[in-house]
Amino acid sequence: MNVIEQIKQTFKLYLEKTFDLDKKTIENCNLELNVDPAKQQFGDISTNVAMILAKKLKQDPRDLALQIAKDFSHDNVEKIEVAGPGFLNLYLKPESFHSMISQMISSGDNFFKISENFSKKRFNIEFVSANPTGPLHLGHGRGGIIGDVLGNILNFVGHHATKEFYINDAGAQIQKLGKSFKARCEQSAGIDTKIPEDGYQGEYLIDLAKHAISEFGPNFAKKSQEELGQYAKEKMLMQLEKTLSDYGITFDVWFSEKSLHESGSIQAAFDILEKKGYLYEKDHALWFKSTQFGDDKDRVVRKSSGDLTYVASDIAYMENKVERRFDYMIMILGHDHHSYSVRLEGLRQALDIKAPLHVILYQLVKMKTSGQMVRMSKRAGNIVTLKEIIDEVGVDVARFFYLNRKADAQLEFDLDLALKKTEENPVYYAQYAYVRTGSILEKAPNIGMNVPNTKDQKSLAKLLSPLGESEKFLIKKMVSLKQLLENISINFHTHLLAYYVLELAHAFHSYYSKNRVLDEKNKEKSVARLLLITQLREVFVLTLKILGISRPARM
Image (cartoon, rainbow, N blue to C red):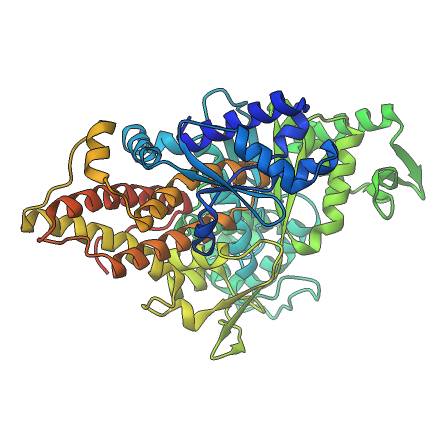
């Protein structure tokens, strides 16, 4: 455990012993490491625990805070002050900061992982899962980056996360693709044919049809609608995989919905629900009693025609995840799937699946330039494709812009800002901080300064004494990444890591502007600062890697 974790653990043990509190109450008593520049006057660690416990303990919160401040002690805590109605502000001893930087240097990336004694889980993260009937559009980019970064974080901290793409390759959508593509092929062959009114009108099928005519030659006329639909689906899947790969996303599993139909898994799932009494027949159709689980209406799983609905596949798909022994299921869907998430939770309960299901709903993405909402292309019908965005602004900008906002908030993708190579562009701002650390470390040996190669805490203490407030803040900011990653592995708020990178970059840029890192007149001080810059660079490397953002050598 690092210093902060040690203090927190000791503090909770003190509360439990002194006030005879249960562990659940204790867990709600959090101590927050102060890494907000505006709150540095409130000590290094703050807590409102006295106000939380006052009512339970029937004491005045300020009196309780004064008692805690008087009684609690820790080797790394220099003093405790009481502020306002009962806030507790803890100030760390200088050697605490020496210890933290020493632990970061000696442990490397492992410093930021969850402790070994935590419960590792197997997560299934299903995201994007676009129908293989057209190119990925603007919105898919947002769901894609949320899922990808969440998987990266879960895997980094010590869990096992499987990134999964669910291929909707069965049912009406594929039949519609077959009809639409056959019509495009006939048009390409000079036959006067119209696209079905409910078909796919996008011009992307024109290019694919030309390729098919060239590939099949005279045998084109012998191809059935089903064969052409299968051909189009496979080609579209290849395009989807290529776009996602270009975007920095690689899936561990591409799961075929069709496989559920062919394996008998759907009927097996029906049998489970029927045995539990959750299926019934009405109007020659088969229904799931989803209203018993909070849905606004029951859902058809098999139509009167005998065709199966998406819900039927969902039942079998969820059972399949359980068979693969996942402890936690995460699905990332567009905001218009709100009722769908309720339905899925109902299925989970009906099937008596113990693994929790968490659905992350992300809001719409809009693009603007010159202050106006725009459509970038006419090549894909009425959509802006993800490929166009990647080609226009680059992978780094696309990934970061999509993530740099909470999932349930609408996102305006500002194309003008995305194309800027200035500090106004958040991606440029963060990457420039990383590049600047490299520039400093590269320049140092040329003026007779080298980064000390030491992991010994006593040597570090000598180098880093005395520490200024700005150095202390940088150390705390770096240390806070550990708790942040652990929190994201619980609440799944991936945007917080994007926020962190920008805050860390701001802290470093501010530090650099106020301090001469390379001061030839004060080499000892400069060497100590080089030590901090070296560790800071490692934190940038780690966070940018998790985000899937490149680390340029020069800018």
